[in-house]
Amino acid sequence: MIKNNKSGKKAPNFILPNQYDEIINLSKIKNKFIVLFFYPKDDTPGCTIESIDFSKLNKNFIKLNAKVYGISKDDQKSHCKFIDKYNLKVDLLSDNKLKTIKAYKVWGDKMFMGKKFKGVIRSTFIIDKNKKILKTWKSVKVKEHAKEVLDYLKSI
Picture 1 (cartoon, one colour):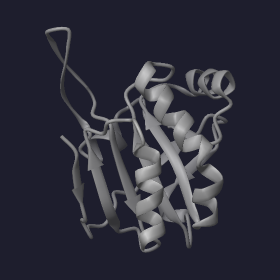
Picture 2 (cartoon, rainbow, N blue to C red; picture 1 turned 135 degrees about the vertical axis):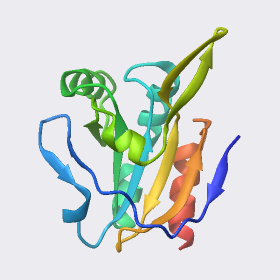
Picture 3 (cartoon, helix red, strand yellow; picture 1 turned 120 degrees about the vertical axis):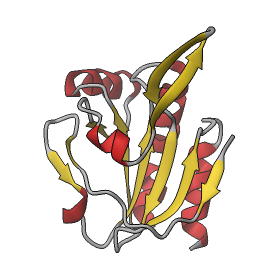
């Protein structure tokens, strides 16, 4: 089920390394929309589709003054391999301590092949230039999702 919420709440700050170990601090990003897509694991089917789709549209996001970041609990080495394998054009942030993932409330119960476990619930957030959450998508289905996010940004 996808919930498309307008929130208006202040986005939780994060300070996370990208694939090159450069520190990305939300509070230091000025005058840009931020698109955060949380995904379960590098180089898995749904995550690959989603990351490739955001990468294909990245130039369009840039034209709208938006920066796209993918966040998972994978480390930088995994992110580098994933980026190189699929020629991804977006930064991938590593949250192996789950601090940001939990702050955005995207860590929860999941089910796979009859087994219940904790994991990242695929979700996307648009954050405005004042660091307020404009829109949230939870339990995202990857097909056409990146385009839906881009279309929303175009509409504001």
